[in-house]
Length: 287
Ligand SMILES: [Zn+2]
Image 1: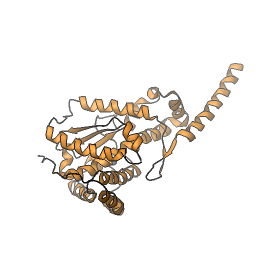
Image 2: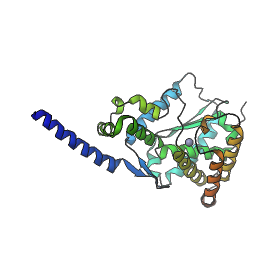
Image 3: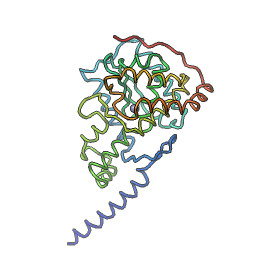
Image 4: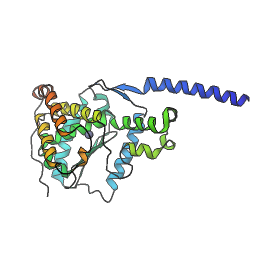
C-alpha cells in the first residue's frame, strides 16, 4: 500500500515537473516571425539525429555524391556566403554553433534539396536548371539553411511525440534525453529519413513560408539579388507541370509562394542594397 502511495505521489510530482518543463522549455518563438514553436527535443539530440541521418545519406550506395571540383566549389561558395550572413543575423548564435556541411548529389533527374537538423544540407544537381545561377541557388540555399536554423525538424519531431506518444511520453523523453526507447523509428520518420534515406517528408505550410521568408532575407544579405527567388519559383512551377518534384510536394502552391515573395521583396531589396555584392555565375548544365 505504502509503496503504491509513494508511487502515485512521485508520479503526480513527475507530471507537474513535466508540465512545468513543457511550459518553460517547450515553447519558443521564432525571432523573425514571432510564431510560437513547440520544441520538446533538445538541440544536442536533434543535431545527433541530423548527423546520423546525414552519414547514412553519404554512405548510401544509391546516392552518388558529386566529386566534380568546380560544381562542388560553386555550391559551397554560395552556401558559405549564406551561412556567413546567418552568422550575422538573428540566428547568429545558432549559426555559429552548427557544424555546417553541404553535399552535392549527382542526380540530374531529381529536383530536390534538403536540410537535416544541425546544418547538414544536400543539393541535387537536378535542381540546377531551376536555380539557373548562383543567385537562384542562394534562394534555395537560404530556404534550406532556415529549415535547420529555425529547428523545423525538431518541431516536427515534437509534434510527432505529442500526437503519437502523448504528452507524458514526450516529457519522459525530455527528462531522460534518451529518446531511443520512445518510438525511435517515429522520430527518424519525423526527421524524414525513416523509410527511404534522403527522402525528406514535406514540411508544413508554416515551415515552408517561414523558410521562404527568412531564406530570402539571408540570401539578400549574402549579396544575392533576392528577385531571383521569384524567378526560381516561376521556373519551379514550369518544371513541375504534369509532375510533382519532391521539393514541391508540399503547400503553399507556387502562386501563393511567388506572391508572398513579392510581398517581402522591398525588405529583402533594402538588405541587398545595403550589403556586399556576391558574384553571379551560371550553374553547370545537366542532361
Ligand atoms: Zn522547405
